[in-house]
Length: 99
Image (cartoon, rainbow, N blue to C red):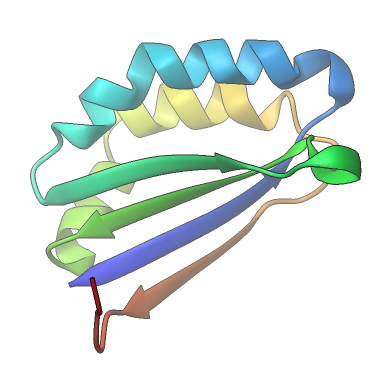
């Protein structure tokens, strides 16, 4: 399993626009082959303009297929236009989980 974390910082005036865009595409992303889960997290207080996506994929290949898709291309283009800082992304292998 592959966990993908993406940190995105938005201009204040774009917060609602990003939330609306995410609401519009979240089910489409979640239904991509290999996507096991998708979560959007938002910072609090002074960091409320920082969002993180936390997604779990069956493999790096599935993530890369999504990243090569038209859905990703269109969504990322719209998202990038709202940024106030460069995004950061990291892929991690899940080693253990306690529930």
